[in-house]
Every structure is written in structure tokens, then in C-alpha cells.
Image (tube, rainbow, N blue to C red; front, side):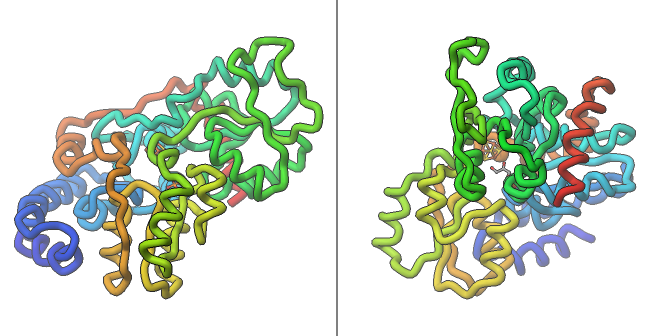
Length: 344
Ligand code: 13P
Ligand code: SF4
């Protein structure tokens, strides 16, 4: 595709979302990326939070963490370029040890950084025999200490699949709270010093959580919802399960990024507000031109926003940044991810 053709097709889709001058400049980069992608026999995975041009012009496979993990497991390309954050690219490597997995910037995540493998080992010592469910938003060494992973799209199904009285659910305090509410479980959060023998005993506890939080979703409050409903009484509010249980309860719908996208596609509300990374609303608006998407754009993920067309092109050109994992650790993490993929 020529730059002019790319520009025209982007203009058709994104004219109300991205200024024309920006589209012209980005069309050139998108064409270069696609040419190099072809040459290197690469596939580009794009998380739903990606910049609209990157999402629409260069990503071959788009989706939430669960969909991208599934698709990463099925690709026959030599190179997987992951436009998302590092824990996601690591998951692709866990599932594809023989392939080159690249990420344009080693972007973090406040949830992944909230817990270490040593923390998980201490919890397992304190609660022996209790299975460990780990959110996909963790690094490979934490996954390697876990029995099974989950995403926001399948967390309830994963917990229920274990058929145990008690589970350790790490590290998202709010996702755990949302799962506890849906499954009717009682949750505790062990004190900071988890090695302390006198700390919380199990008693009637059914879920053991950790106080990690998403620095984006924790910012939304019940007051935000009340304010927006006062201004727009007919608004449909959708919240990601990384928001607090109070916020998801006050919203009209809670689900993963892709579940929110499907909800907008399949309903006919007068207007929608997504309580999640703000740029996703641009991608939803581009797909659903007739729908009115409200924005609360003070809330951006500083990590997802590190991924640009410029560093995506550099990633393919310079083979940076390549994800590598020690094989022994990868194999242990693989067991937890694969077990999740069998569940749904
Ligand atoms: P999803 O799995 O819903 O795409 O969420 C990933 C994430 O990081 C949300 O902040
Ligand atoms: Fe992590 Fe939150 Fe950013 Fe998602 S939005 S990558 S959970 S910091």
C-alpha cells in the first residue's frame, strides 16, 4: 500500500479522532512498519489501548490480554512484535520459546511491579497447600510460582475451576475484590510482613489477596460516576474490573477491555463512558461511528503510552527490545498460563 492509500484509508476511519496533519505523518510510518513486518515475517499484536493509527494500520491481531495470549500461542510467524506492556510480551515468549519476541519499549505496569516471586513464596509458606491464582499482569518469575494464571476476562471461571475452599489471588486488590463479590467469597489481605507467624490465620477465609493496584483504574471513584450521571442521566458507564468493587458496582457493566468493546457494539445506548485507559475510547469510537463516547481523559496509562509508531518501527529495524527468559523459569510459568488457556 502506498503512503497516499494509507493516508486515505486512515482518514476514512479516523477523521473525527486524529487531526489530518498527524494522519499524514503517521501514514508514512505505518507504511514503513508494514513493509518491514513483511520482510521479517513478523506479526504485530496490538492491545486495545494502543494509539488509534497503530491499532488500525499496523496491528494484525488486536484484543485484550486473554485474546492476545491465545493468538500469540497460535502464530506461525518468526517474529512477534508486541505493542503492549512488558508482562504481555513475556506471556507471548512463555508461549513461543522458539520465536523472537520484541517489544518497542520495556513498558512496565504498576500491578506487575507490586509483587515479587519472593513475596509469592512467602505466601505459599504461610498458607501451605492453597492454590495460587495469578493475574496475567505479573512478570514471568511470579507466574512461575503460581498454579494458574487468569485475566480480567476469565478470573471468575479460573477461581471456580479450582473447586477449592480457599485460593490465593494475586496481586490486584480490586480485581480480587470484584471476583470475591461475584463468587460470594470472603477475602483478606495479609499484613505487610507476610513472614510473621502471628499474622492473619485462615479462619473462614476463602480468598487471600494482595494490595497491588492499577495506577490508572484506582483513580476512578463512585463520586466520578455520580457526577457524570448528574450531567448525563442517560449515560451507560462501563468499568474495568481493575476498578474498585464500589466503582464496578455503581457502573452499568464491568468487564475486560474487549468485553467493554463488545458491550458498546451490541447495545444501543445514547452515550457511553468507559472507566479505563482513556485512549481506548478513540478506538471504540472509530469502530462505532454512530455512538456517542464520552471521555475522562485525565486518566492515561503512562506505560501503554510509551508504545509509539516511531519505536515500533525501530523495534523491527534494530531488533529491540528482545524478550528472553531462562528456560527453567519459562517452563514453570508456561504451566500456569497453559492451564488458564484450557479453561476459557
Ligand atoms: P485487559 O485484559 O482487559 O485488556 O486488561 C489489561 C490491562 O492492563 C488493563 O489495564
Ligand atoms: Fe498496568 Fe494499569 Fe497500565 Fe493496565 S492500565 S498496563 S494494569 S498500569
